[in-house]
Image 1 (cartoon, rainbow, N blue to C red):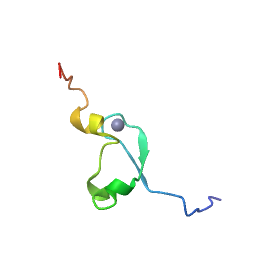
Image 2: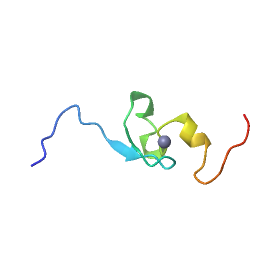
Image 3: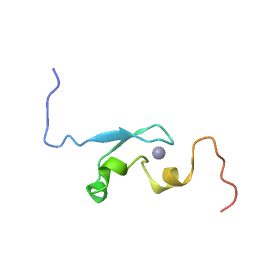
Image 4: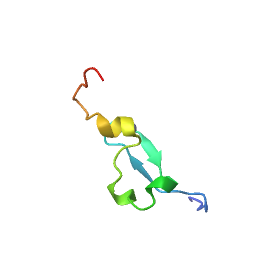
Length: 53
Ligand SMILES: [Zn+2]
């Protein structure tokens, strides 16, 4: 049986790198809209290569 902890935070799968990431304080108001684990992932779409800076 799974034990529940207070420290259990919600998590999602990043749409870009497909890795799980955990809720962060800075996302508390936009959690429903968060799809990426980091700015880096939100800026680079999967399958699309970014060239240069
Ligand atoms: Zn990511």
